[in-house]
Amino acid sequence: MAEEEKQDLLQLYRFCFLMLADAAKAQEIFHATLREAAQLAADGEPPRDKLWFFRNARWRCLEAGEQGLQAEDVDLGLGELADWAPAQIGKLESEQFAIWISAAPDPQRTALALFYLDELSFRDLLSVTELKPPELARLLGNGRREFQAWLDATFPMAKV
Amino acid sequence: MSAPVQLSRRDKILIHCGPIREEHVDDRALRTALHHARKTDVFAIQQNFDKAAAALVQTIPIPKEIIEWVPTETFIAPTRRPWKRYAQNPAFLATGIAVLVIAIVGIFQLVDRLNRFPGEPIALRLLTTASSNKSVMLDPVKTDAGALGDFFFMKHRLAHYDVPPEFADLKTLGCRVFDDEEGQRVAQVWVVEKKMQFFMFPAERDPRTGAVKHFNGWRYVDQDRWTGAVKEENGVCFMAALRGSENDLAPYVSKKKE
Image: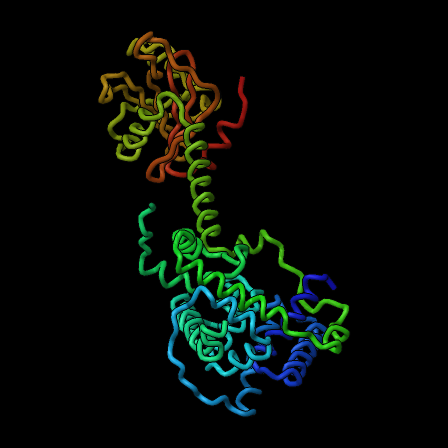
């Protein structure tokens, strides 16, 4: 297996983790996705590209997310992106970011998870999220500002 | 101090999608928007924000079981050959079809140009004459077509108005001599076989030098289901015309006679 493909699969796990903020569930969905790919490959119809893995895992994650505990809907409003945001983000644990992303409604959840995974090109991102560019732009733009508001609430400026 | 950059509404929307890595920009509109936005502070802040968040994602620990479990064989189908992908691209497909059509038209024009010969316009006009004439308009002459050369010379002083050997044996019904639209003397002969008609007319000449424009062998013309086989010799063109196709004339012109 090519090293690139192996890295793609490891990123698939991170995607599952961002979607669910639960390592055990992420691992379970990762395994289930790979098993289905293996089955298809054995039947002579292997997945056409890496996008298949992300699409498949996405729907499994959304299904699993519906069955588990639902995040509380807390409206922190929208914040303006700040110069000091990287410093605020630097104080976060990856689990905290995953919790924040997994609490977002879909398709914003998928869009944010895939965007910050930094694995897919713009067109691939549109393809997997099944969004049009203006929709994706709105979801990402709002997501940033909501995240900034959450950062400001979690790490007020004075503490940074 | 540089003037503030004015972004269009479309650019303002698209820059929200600006990927963290440059190589992920695979859309022209997005690339243009990012090119415009790079000079703005807002986009610089967004990029720093995104890079920090993406770096945080890459710190998500991958369980040992996942690393060990990733299979050694590939599950992804081999990439299709690029030419197939290009062939399915509408832009390439449209361009390919356009090039093909241009090539076909070009080939037709080239073939048409290669088939043209001096005197072709007159031959086409005479085909129209052939399709509209009746044999009663002619002076009845029953002889071998090959014998009419002397007749045209003796009676009408038309030199070299000879029927080629390929058609010389055919029996005639009648003939006439007339002036065409350009005042050129044209000899017309009816023969019994297949209601064929022969025309003999002066070959085309160079308007500046007056020299005859020669061409070799038999050339075909067709118009309104009439076909003519034309040959030039000694400054006179001979055309055998009949209602039918090139295939109907081919057996005559292919036989060599001394």
